[in-house]
Length: 60
Image (cartoon, rainbow, N blue to C red):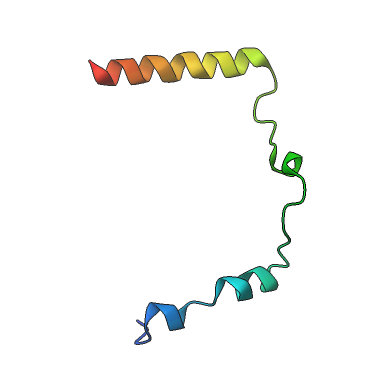
């Protein structure tokens, strides 16, 4: 792989160009950002319990 001699600011496209190329659009409704990662409340509660146990174990 070749290494570019250009400064990083010149080698990377501008944010505006990337947004244009990817046809990105502004978020107009925050509900668009919502993701349903848990199919049931019990799954979320189990995950949080496991996470807390792991965190607590690493603190001891």
